[in-house]
Length: 531
Image 1: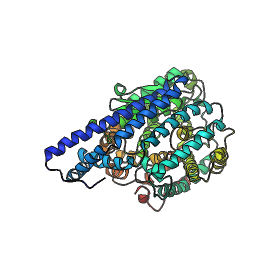
Image 2 (image 1 turned 180 degrees about the horizontal axis):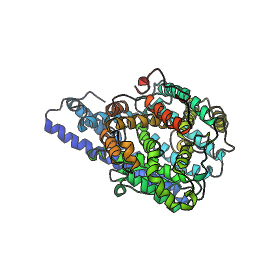
Image 3 (image 1 turned 90 degrees about the horizontal axis):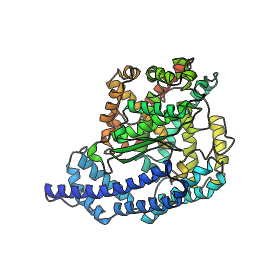
Image 4 (image 1 turned 135 degrees about the vertical axis):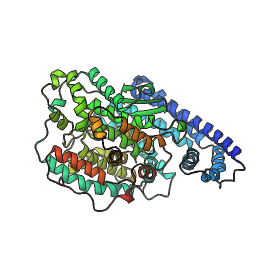
């Protein structure tokens, strides 16, 4: 892109801004149409629609990418650059010009043909995975995985030179982060978590049999949706449907949908999946209406987004205050199953710490160990240090070292996550751990401003917390970089200490641990981790 030319007058700048927003809205609409097809494929589409669906999504992604790299768009952004720099940094127009410029500069490096090929392949791979996992058939997925790795490396090549081949993927998800920074962050986090996990797992396991009885699926679905509505999920602009792997998707400011799954023999599956996705959806519903249809009209990063799903699912949804309000209702719905189970026993059950095979079922303490394993494996696959066909063996070895258990089959091992079978490999998992860390930092900042939030939660009132998050986080969309947004909301860039304090206090009380909980806060801050 060439250097920006001076804008002759304010009127001409405003006219160009109108044109810029029109072009960006067209791109947004094409992407949204593709997202509708993706949602349909994951919810209601019959199996026979898969081949055509891959072709349809590839066409839409190709068209959207072509629009996104048009020279005329680049010239328009160039012409507005100096005008944008003359505006207050945090105003909508300055942010739009700044972010649109960054996105354009990245997208012009990617050939439209690559976008179409990758889209078609990922659609076909996901369709194959939905059958391969239940059948425990990893062999079927090996050629798909190999092709995904080829496409993932090809994508990175467009952004060379880089320090690590995963860096372009990581930056797409969490702007400003690199593989080296994530490794440093994970090293510090792991050193703090492992001792605590060991101390707790050495105790007799908490009794969670109350969660494993037979619970009618429709009643579970209705209860989960009721809680999501209480949190603030607006059903006039959203809906809840069933799928194989829960997710949230945004079509527009007025249509942000979530999905869940229901397990008749696990009352926590549907509930916590729904609360997780509702956290994502409330973030999207809270983005300023004026930003809709532009690159600003979405969350700031995958890590910041995950902070909201983990905040509502875990910090709120697994808290004693939450269950103090909602447990009597749940007992009335499932009187036969829960009538003899006390609030304290149920709260302990939903916070049971145990080494488990499935990431999405993992407790707050062991969850990050699952993430670190996946992050390490995808780096090795991208670097060519781990072949696709050897993934099950490497997975099982890593699980044995990090969690002390290993799956008996691939269904509960390397096939369990949809991520590597529905998109690029690289930058797909670090955001979950970053989200965990940030969830506690955001909640601590909200509590500092509104100390009565926990008491309100115990009364089933979530408006104060939701409003604080909307005002300090949601409304800004992606106007600011993740570092900038976190610092604006909390007064500091990402720090690990609020998260470790949260874990120490919560699990120290649940498991009657000595002061310190078997681990300590790092002496060094983590300011560099996201800078």
